[in-house]
Every structure is written in C-alpha cells, then in structure tokens.
Amino acid sequence: MSDKQIITKVLSRKEFIDNPPVLLDIGASGKIYKAWSEIAKYSICVAFDADAREIKYIENGTSGYKKVYIYNKIVTSSNNNEDNFYLTKSPYCSSTLKPNSISLNDWSFTNLFNIEKVVKLKTINLNQVLTELNIKQIDWFKADSQGIDLRLFASLNSKITNKILAADFEPGIIDAYIGEDKLGALLLHMNNLPFWVNEMKLPKAIRIKKETIKLLIEKFGSQIENNLNHILKSSPVCAEISFLNNFKSFENFNLRDFLLLWTIAYLKKQYAFALEIALLGTKIFNDEIFDELKDVIIKKIEQKTKTIKIKKILFKFINFFLRKFR
Image 1 (cartoon, rainbow, N blue to C red):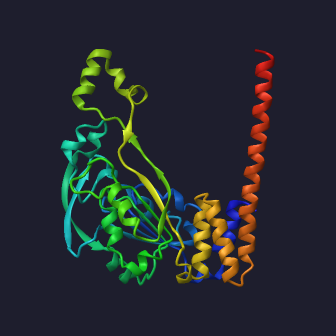
Image 2: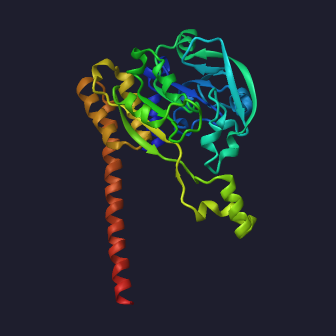
C-alpha cells in the first residue's frame, strides 16, 4: 500500500468526515504549506496573512483544502482593534514588529527587510477567531509570523494547546526584529508543555556588512557578489522547528486523535513514534485499523533494512574492485 493510499484510508474514515483535521496557518504567504499537501483535501484550514501581496492562491479558489477560512488581518495576542504593520521589500519579511536595522546591517540579506510602507491594519486574536468559527480544537499549528510565533501560541487556551498534535514554528536566532520571540524562549516555553522536538532546520546567511561587500567588489570585481555563498561561511539566522505531542496523557485523546497523530508522525517519517501510537491504539481501541497501521510501519522499517543491506553489499563490491585495480 502506497503512502497516499494509507493516508486516504485513514482520513476517509467517519471520524474525519464528521470532524476534519483543523490546520492553523499564521503567515500563509505564497503557497500551501508543503507539510500539509497530503492531508489538505481532507482538512479545514484557518489561514492568516496581513500582507495580501502573496495570498492570491486562496482567494482564487485553488486552495486545495476541504474548507478554508482566510483572514487578511493582523493576528495578535492582545485585544487591540488595530496595529502597525511594517510592509517590507520582501512580503515574507513583513511584520507587526519593526525590523532591527542596526542588527540587520551585519547580514547579507538586510535589503529584504527595508521598510516600504507602514500601515494601520485591523487586528484579531486567535481565541476570537476560534469562537467566531465555532472551532474547539487545533490539530496542527503552524506559525511563520515574523517574530511573534511564541506569543501567539501562548495566547491560546491551555485546553486547546495541550491537545495540539503538531506545532511548527520559525523563530529567529539573530535580532531581525525589535522585541521578537527567539528560538531560546520558544524552547523554554515548549519544555513545560507536552511536546517533543521532531525536527529542526537552521537556515543560514552570510554575516557581512554592505561596506565589506563593497570592499570585496573593488578588490575582485562585481561578479564576486553573486558567488559569496560559495566563498564565505554562512551562519544560522533562524530555525524551522517542529514539535509533536508526546501523548503522555493519552487518556485525553480519542480514536480520531490517535489516527491523526499516527498520520502526522508517518508523514514526518517518525516511524518509531508512529509504531508506538499504533501499538497503544491496539490496546485501547477495539479497531483493526491499528493492526494495519502497525504493519505499515513494520513494512517501512523492513524496506529500509533491506536498502541498508544492499548498500553495504555494493560498498564492499566497489571497495573490492578499487583495491584490485589500484
């Protein structure tokens, strides 16, 4: 059974027809969140982006979700009715926080944060939205809010937060915005909640001032600017970090939640965790689906084991010929 077939089998069940997965997307610029591509058509998406320059994909009816609600408003953790919004050269850098120009001057991508316009926009907080839409749960939380991911997540009611199955954030490491929520603060906060880090990537850039680039251009010619990524070492500037619910309080979750967390773990290739969920589901629920999900994972592990064996044989074979004809 292919990945698509097993996902279809799980999410086509009555549990999800009556209660679809709820995906919350803060900072929905550009295109559908890649991690949701396999489950979007079964899911409800609540999306926010105050910078409407990159959100046409939802407005023109090609979202790919079962149902989507789009808010072109600033999402805040407060109850203010409006707030400043800094529109930057790159729509993906626009924020309610003012870019930290002094700190950014040390980095090669500083121009992306140039402020083109400051506008006053209407605001809304997450709890207001959930009440308005009569949504009582969030299954997968994703925030790329340019500096305020943590405060938005922390503004949710704890009953909702503790039952979130997956949460993806993009906190900063450098001071890109004045007063932003950074990676360290997020890790401290999540450490007190029922989550574990599934994955973390560290996008990088070159720490170099404009004046230094100018000096290099004078020395080596203008073409060097396009080759700096190949010449100079880059350093982490932010994190793309993903958390999964640890399911320690599994008694608070129902059959639907077990199936959906298994699906999320499977999509994220956390096969050991998915196997543990399937085994626990077999004990708790009288549903044969968990035996099938367990077998799916066992087969995945078996396939990977065979691949490793083949690679080892090929490696020995190659080494043999290299030694023979050296």
